[in-house]
Image 1 (cartoon, rainbow, N blue to C red):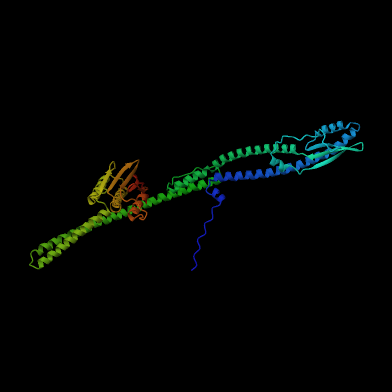
Image 2: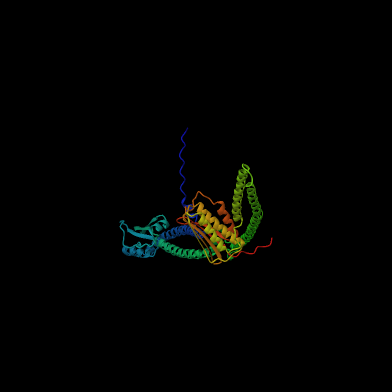
Length: 467
């Protein structure tokens, strides 16, 4: 068999998607605006450089073209002037020229004094001058006086002053554009925050909907598109609230029907099984008395059978009482709820003497309605069962109190706590269904050590609508 090649490493994430993904919308919009400004600035800079280069070439060519007529005119006017005065006059006239540098050379190829001096100070940076400056041009203009060549005027392109002007213009334009861009970015940052604030409110509303708070509503913004979304959100929240209210009413009806059926079943068990078992027990006692008058071995056999029947009747009576208690706790609805809960905690402590079971039930009303009373009783019962049978706790604390218009129930233990390999059992699922059906909340909170069962139930049950 050919060896399996190792898996190829995953490609590294790209930089731009990593910087872009997961960013807020305002940041993305600002990045887009900044990129647009940078592109616009680059295009504007390219246009300015192209125009400045063209203008510099034109200005330099025009200045160089002026030198030759100027020399001819000067020589024509100074035919009788001495050479030193002639060179000095030419130098003075060349000083007014821009974009060129003129060097006067006599017949012996020696530079004379004067000419256009080169500017020593340049404002534009070197890189800008290299981009703008046209190709170097040099032109020689012969100096001829009375048919004799007396020297040469060496003309060199010198566009530094034009480049400095272009640099000053570009710098002023750039600073103005930068200031306007920064002001625009600040205004857009505030405007985007104002425009996108309804989205933040909508996200908060969705979070409340996720937490099953269907009273969440968002304000209708001025933006038409966002106003449509806000309207749809409010309608959705209203529809979910109505659906939940209808679901709660249906759940209450189902729980009421279930408890009514339990109550009828318990009543039938009590009224039918009770007399029947009592009759069996009475007949068994009667047969035992008759058997006592008989001779052996019939008396022994009948006595053994009547004892077996009496044991079976006692066992069935025990099962019947436990079943009646599961269907309908004894005394619930007839004695105060706090008393029923105290008896439940006391019974759990009696059956589990190895565990310290304590209960704090105080400040409760006599009752909160059949469904609420039965739900509280069942939740305390199931919480005690889980803590005593499954958690391995050495101490269990039960607390039921009424605070801020709600019943707060807590069952705390110091057992093994929540384990990841054990899911939600039937008992906990049944408790959750009952509690949420009455509009309450149930939560299992890990503690150190052990687990805490927390339940909050509204004390007032809304009136049920007629079917």
